Amino acid sequence: MTAELLCQVLDAAAAAGSEPTGAFLTPVALTPVFTVAERSERRWRPVGRLHDAPQQAREALITYFRHVVPAVESPADADVARFAEAAELLEDETRRNGIAVAGRRFRIVRVERITLMGPDGPEPPRPTDFDAR
Image 1: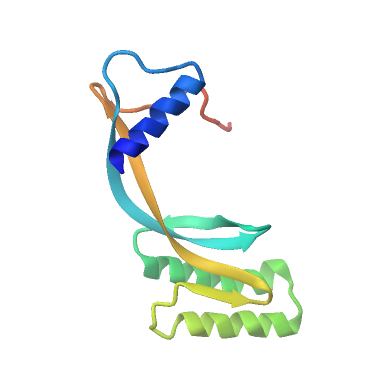
Image 2: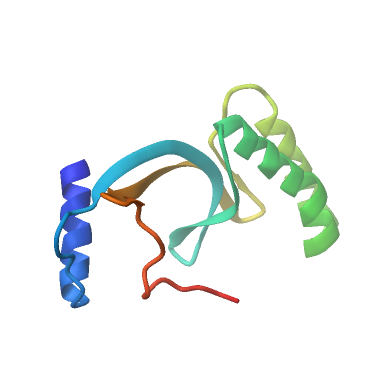
């Protein structure tokens, strides 16, 4: 997989007209992290921060269902009850990784990460990377 990833990076750089010269960058795998994703508009989108373990992501989703949804999204009373039931299901120690509630789908997802290492250390941001101020 590492070689495939390197090929993708090099192909993207060549397509952008910035193919690296000299020493190639080497992909280095970082530890995986976990987050919550929600299915909307036919695709999964990560929602929330990254966690070191799947259980931490589940706990974040439980907090979202119990506290954020009722306070911020102001759903109907029936939906508040559904989100509370979903939070209880996530606490049942079955290591549940997906749940549907009130017409929405959520999943605990694993995120694989890499960094590119060169002779001078890890790759810094590229000029083409978005950098909000």
